[in-house]
Length: 239
Image (tube, rainbow, N blue to C red; front, side, top):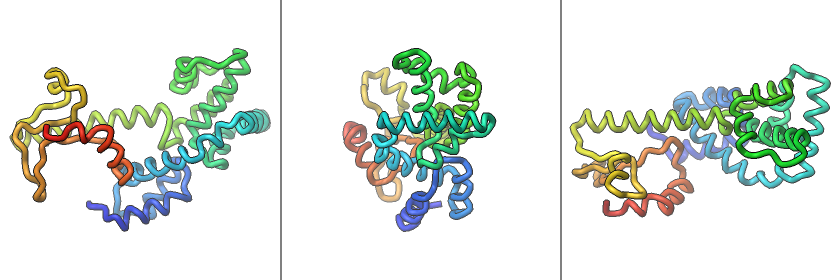
């Protein structure tokens, strides 16, 4: 179903009180039952990313990181089986996956006596069993599976959705016997920046002439459209 601008603004206002957990997504779906889970998650994810960018520097200040780390150590010692890192992230309004990254980074600094490599850090976030501290490994795992906006699990899901939608788009065009070139064919022809689809014969949709199609696995608000126009879409002009 179509989403009006008024409905969109109402959803955005309601997301301001939510945290990026799967429990909060259930609350969002209950509040707006007429919209799909994927639409609501897409809107919330975009809005939470904006919120995170606004507070990024505050959460990454050295004294704040140390305070979070010491609090984690204290609470993990007192409650070794509790998801203390997840609860801390929710309390301070930080993405659980980003909190896990901050704490793991600080842990590895103490273990190795220096800054850990991004390769090591990313591999442990993707596979917490590699973390040499079992309690921290469990906490990182809890943060990863409960975060609906950030982290390696979300990245995999977004990539899979993007690939799925591109396949579905091609299937829909073939069903309608529309002649087109996909991104791989365009790159083979020497194009550097390419849309997902160029229609070899343009079509009309609701009074607009369509030459090409770009599929995005994210919600398109005004800011996103302006960004994509400047960084991508203007380069497709007259193609």
